[in-house]
Length: 221
Image 1: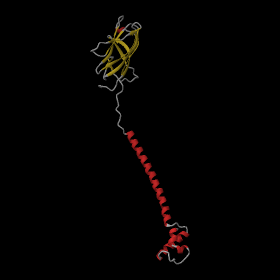
Image 2 (image 1 turned 90 degrees about the vertical axis):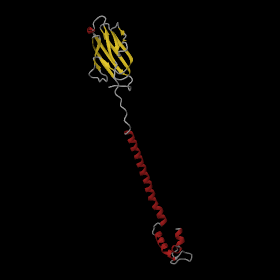
Image 3 (image 1 turned 60 degrees about the vertical axis):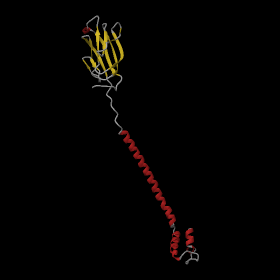
Image 4 (image 1 turned 45 degrees about the horizontal axis):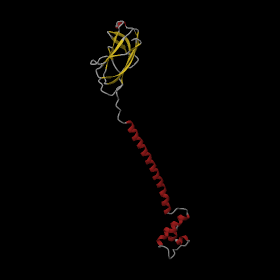
């Protein structure tokens, strides 16, 4: 309005001719149009420019929001890829273990059978366990007999057998030890029966358990 008052004083005052201090006559048409816009409620050019900048600001703000959402989505995608494409972990073989039931005595040795409903990770052949992995092993033997017996544990040719301490006058055994075993060692049990032959030994119950305690070392399969 101040610009219009300076440029178009004659028009604002209702005059048909410009005053001596007014601008050049060729501006009269512009002044006439501006006054007409003012009287009809049309905003001047300066105000139109200000109002025109508001939609641009809204679009700019909306664009920033969309860009932020896209950035968050990209970050989530990268996190998902990192979580699902990480290097596969090394799978170690199952822990070596075996549980066997004492069945009979033959030729001075105890014989065993493997439970059918249990998965064993160690093999037993001719009631002997061949060691395939180096490390420490838990060896547990328990059982009861109707005669006096003496049980010896063998696992290496270069070592003397280990005599298991007996309970109840030699009729019960509950023995546990940790032994350092190596590849190709063979675990088996022998029996001495002072009062009867091995084949006539009456066994109430008996169980042998062997568990590898230190997996991750050398193994030969």
